[in-house]
Amino acid sequence: MCVVGRDGSIAVVECKLASNGDRRRMVIGQVIDYAAAISMAGADAFIESWLHNTQTDLRVELDSAALATLRTNISDGHVDLCLAVDKIDDHLRQLVEYLNRVTIAEVRVTALQLSYAKHGDVEILIPTTFGGEIADAKARRSGRSTRWTVETFLAALGTDEDRSLASDLFGRAGAMERLGRKDPLWFGDSPGGGIYLQPHGLPFAPAWLSINKSGVLMVTGTWNWFGEILHHEGYGPLASLLQLDHLGGATGRPVAQFDLDGLWAAIIECGVAINEAFG
Image 1 (cartoon, one colour):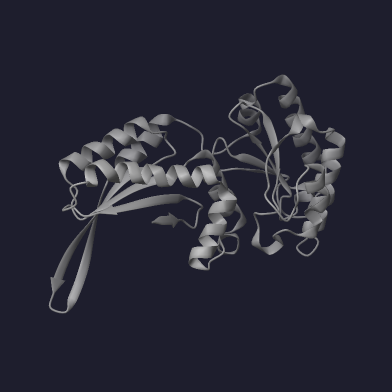
Image 2: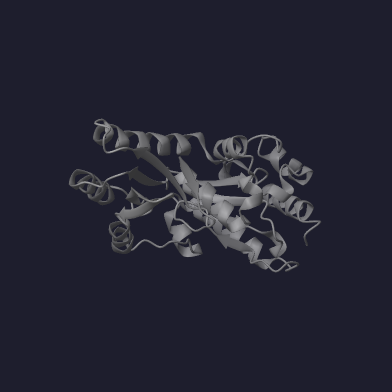
């Protein structure tokens, strides 16, 4: 089972009965396997699968900030793990404590005990949790920021060339005439996520900048991200520049591959076009 929070958090839940002798060997492996599959498939595949299985479009249900956070969590593997059983024993507590000790601060590992009780015709499930305080303490000890700043983003880039390119784009965004109420840069909620470029401060960001695992500055179009403007024709020129189709997937491209003036012109054109009904 998978749960998506209104804030864009995501958790996978594996359920086992205490009477199931395989639970100690299997439950951990299964919940990690599910989380890995979600992250490896990517946010677009997850959102489409969610729509197919629940008839609920997360691009409509979640606001833009939460949707962006969900995408970041999936791409970075920040998927919480929950082990749901009818009894939390000492062995399971040890497993939860260990996993919280060896996983990163952005991944919470918890156990959920659902005890059954019945009074007359009333049936009750009584929840008890374990691991939440341990995960919170892990996050506090990590001391990691939960949001990028311009300074931390630039410092995380691997080359001076990419730092120069990012600084240039940030400066161009900040110098534009403000036509909307948004800030020209929207900072993602997780290190490893992105900084969203919002030309003229208009509501929908046409592109975001991120840093891949090699420290390379990447640019990604957002034509799959917002339900109100999904695959909007205004994304066409930007997608074409990125050698993609705005009706298909949105793969990140290294910024250094492009002429910066041409890339910025395409981002501005796209931003105006997709926001024309919302400016």
